[in-house]
Image 1 (cartoon, rainbow, N blue to C red):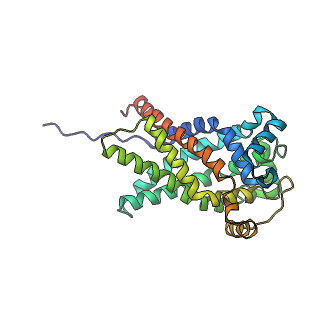
Image 2: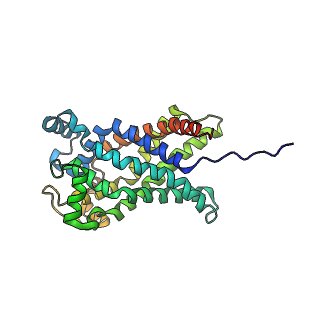
Length: 291
């Protein structure tokens, strides 16, 4: 009887490429919701906390293209960010297993590691994207933004708040990956293979879960990124002082301003991302000869 040949494992670039491409598709689709989310996080008071007021103001001042402001920069950020996340998570999980034999604990730890790796990798682009999106006219574009921040604030300016972003990334990516994997694992245990359709549903659940878990940190870190820009006051020194300050001044719900807009955006964004992954990954595996 001939020996059973081990199934060839796909290379890490398949996970990276499918994750990056899927994210680009999803973020372009939901760019208007991303613009709404960013404005509600950074300037909710200026619009009376009204989503409709934000949308009307953007359309009045900038036209329909205003809803895609910053999307080009976001593509430069979102491809490497998600490529790194979907590469780093399985890579970390594989290398963590000898140290953490428990499968669930290893997966949770790897999710956190993958999230921190991808956020740190693209953080300067995230800084510029946040400022260009919420404060039109401050920078001419991504390169101009990077150069201006670098000249005015130094290298530290390009990583201003990176530790805060990593604090946010831990609950966000744990919730995102674990929600999707639990739902996918349950489905497969029932003999149901997960394709683009179920990927859409499970991805939507992952988007709501991750956003809800990490939103207070997201809210404060965005405020930290844009304070002092475009005439905004400098109010906070760090993420925890920011959380305390927001809650003390405006109540607990102030750190959830924009959360509804964020869920509306992230639910379809992650739904499209994971649905596309269930399309792109098998396709790339086939093209690369790993089917």
